[in-house]
Amino acid sequence: MRKILLVIYFIGTFCNAEPIISDITESQCWFAGSEVKNAFSISGVETDRLSGQWRLSIANHTVMRGEAALNTAGGIAPFNISFTLPEVKSGIIADLILDLSVIDVDSGNKLVTTNKIIKSFSQDTFVDMNKWLKSLDIVLFDPEKTTAELFDNLKIPYRFTKNTDALTEINQGIVIVGEGVSLNENKGLWNVLVDVASRNVPVLCLALRDGEMKIPGIGTTDNSPKPSALTIKRYQAITDLNKSLDRQSWCGERMVASQSVIFKGERDQVIASIEEGSKNWLWLEQSFEGSTAKLVLCQFQIIKNWKQSPVPQYLLLNILENMCPQKTGKKVLSKF
Image (cartoon, rainbow, N blue to C red):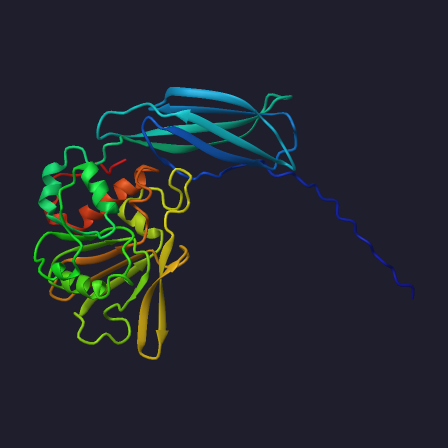
């Protein structure tokens, strides 16, 4: 019996994928009146003759538009767009739409289109909020005086101290620890902050520079106030406060934190340590039994990046609103 070998040939049709526009800058939040630079990358292109077109609009009204030849290398073409946002009235946040199209010059066909929202913020974040800010009764612990200088420029009222012991006598308002403070140079500071928060006084600790601390409820922390909740977050902390704010890229700047919190344990001891880099925890929030106040450690560099993007300014505003809701005199413009 003769064996028959059956050979089957499969004939397939392979279709090239459509080009893709990737947003390199990622930022959506910008100051009104500022120069906006957005970088995009076009991948999957098969022709060297491309044109990039863009249109900035608000409420379907064209604000400005532009077009540029795109240079392709290895199937990838950079598409960089720059424009100056128009000014907006004080206290206003405007949503604009940036539409992008990539055109095949030879055929005139649109190869790919996309759009992104550009949020334009007025630069006076704390406009008409003097009464509310005064009601917060801020006590600022700031031996570095970097935060104090900014508060002075913004005319944010506060009581200044660089004495850790003075914080033990605080029984009202909110305590803010200025950005860049070292726990190594201010021994016992964290224990004092825990005590203050457990006595129903909110505590906001801006990005620490270095040091270690014991977190009540984690490991053995004898004689510490009894915690009722502990929350740790990374970039999600920003969007949990305000979904419209950029998380990891502030006007293209990705170094939004340079130190983060890592937990180290040995036997029954667990230490929270401030380490170089942003790969670990960037937000720690704790509350205590018998107290409605929160102790918040925010490792995002709000003060350092204050003028880089509107995000640090609105982030501080939203944090204060969240920590002192009973003192909010009006709805702050965080609705987009």
